[in-house]
Amino acid sequence: LTHLKTYTSKQQQTYKIIKSLHDRGLGYRRISYNLNQRNILTERGNRWGSNYVYSVLKRYEERQSRIKNIRNKKFEPEISNLWLEYS
Figure 1 (cartoon, one colour):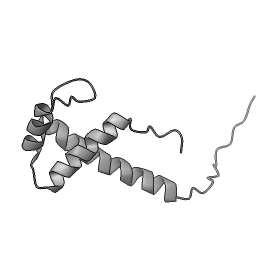
Figure 2 (cartoon, helix red, strand yellow; figure 1 turned 45 degrees about the vertical axis):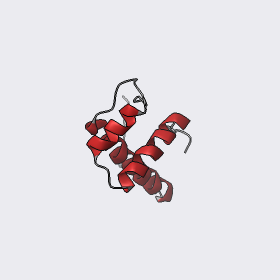
Figure 3 (spheres, rainbow, N blue to C red; figure 1 turned 60 degrees about the vertical axis):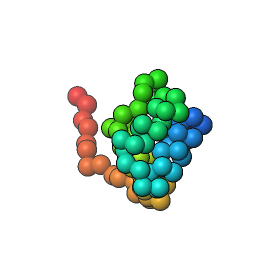
Figure 4 (cartoon, rainbow, N blue to C red; figure 1 turned 90 degrees about the horizontal axis):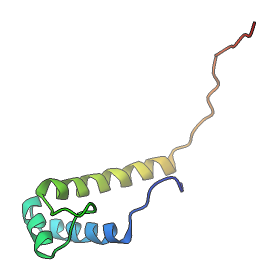
């Protein structure tokens, strides 16, 4: 599935930091504070907010689920009942 966008190494590293902090029990606000203290910026160069942290965690898990479902899904050919006539 080469058409699926892969994460950059920076994005992967940032996700690992966020996931690690979240697994240790920190909330979104504290994680964003921690990232800002480390001078780690978002992909667009902004400071972190709790909403960005939430989105990173949520979207990563959603994406992994989508990729897993696409890779394991078998697509059956579909035959259409459409009939075209040219005059």
